[in-house]
Amino acid sequence: MILNFFSSRGWESWDIERRPLIPERMPVLIDDDLAFEAGPGAPRPATVVNGWLRELPASGCPASSSWESYARAVKAWMEFLAEHGVALFDSRVQLKYALGKYAEYRAAGPVKERFAATTWGQHMSVLSLFYRWAIAEGYAEAEPFTYRTARALFAGTGREVRVNLAVRRTPKPHVTIKYLEPDFTQLFLNGLRGLAPDGTEDRYRGRELARNAAVGELALATGLRLQEFSYLLAYEIPALPAKPTEVPIPFPVPSGATKGRKFRTTWISYAALAAVHQYLELDRPATTDGTAWLPPPRWGEPLLVTEPDERGGRISCRWETLTPSERRRLVGPDGGSCVLAVKNGGGPFTAWASVFERTSDRIRTRFEPRFPHVHPHRLRHSFSMRTLEYLVNGHYRQAARLVRATNFGTGPDAALAFYLSKADPLLVLRDLLGHASVLTTEKYLRRLDTTRIFREAYEQAGIADGLLADADAEREADTEFAGDAAGVS
Image (cartoon, rainbow, N blue to C red; front, side):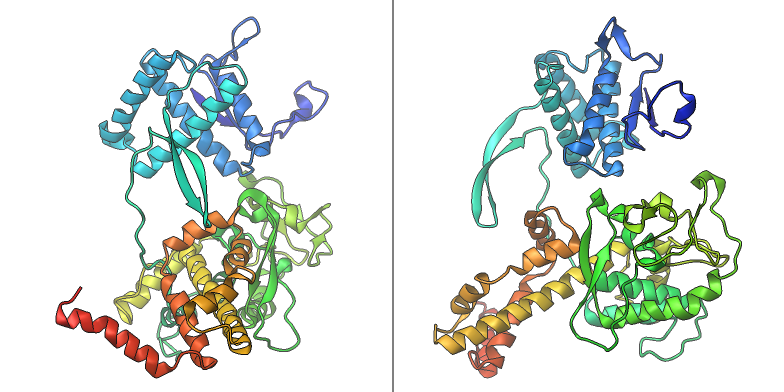
């Protein structure tokens, strides 16, 4: 079976009147004999799957990368069924037998064909979605899965959910340090600048240090994903306020570069935005102005930009609508790429995973053996923790003031009551990170050490407003650990 990806380039020569209603990069499954019908008017299973794939953009799955993952999962299942003489829409008994064999094959078969539990779960979720659609559309009479009903608790509300029994059980994720503490954050930023841990000059002489530091600080201060900050355009950087401010500055994230093409607004600190503007004003023009850079032919035709501003330019579209593949083809009016970070010669630079890893290796080798490996998503985790700390501290301070002003009582229950009556920090963080729901944000935060943030925020707010004495807190902590010394549980 062949997996191809649709492109409408040159459709005018296809002897059709209008451009096909198929999204660009939509996966298309084709049988080896290149036929689409099993008989007169009877679609082949591959054709049915293609119909399901084409409905994904309107069914809550707008990302082309997800379309490909879904197509590959169904393709692998179809090929396995064909090898064992089972039809995609066979009887339930046959499908269940095939699923059992498939589970054994992916768990203990050839090494290169084995799936981790999480990958297997993703494939089963995709196949379950496909079979439910096929049954609803009348293509299938049965599916191979068995479900049980469970009760789940989300945000304090219980509801019944269906659990696919074909999914392997996995251990619950434990809290691991997946973010940078403030001291390691500063160490990392100094490393990107080519400086020693104390901020002094280092003998290291890397290239494009100003660019690396500016983009690294931007990623830490905004929580952008790798694709989002890699394909951000220089023109999309917000203006720098006239005066320094402690209040975060709104930072629009263009929908064309986001996961799922969803526009959102995050924020950035004044210091991080100032560093980006310094790069834009000093270092970047030296790399791009007057260069003859053009995108290689394999990327497609160059998109020449004239009269650019913060919203768009003369290429007949707005910046926010451009996809990453289109953004890397933009050529500025003075030469060079329009992407924020550029390399020698004026082309776009996107190899941030390598930059961050090399910087981490250098810090670990020369200065701090405990320094972790830093990948782009670790910066997003660090942003999440700093932002949650910022939000929770503000809410607890407000709650403590209300407790003191109303004599409502003291202690964590009183503070929590007022805290919960205000806007939930998780809702704010959900919007900044671009999550589809606060449930995603909750699950995401469970894998980070958030307990410390809530505890410290409550203690600091209580001490500041006279609700909790520092000495009382110390005595309470000493009491907790006294049991450890005495061997008392």
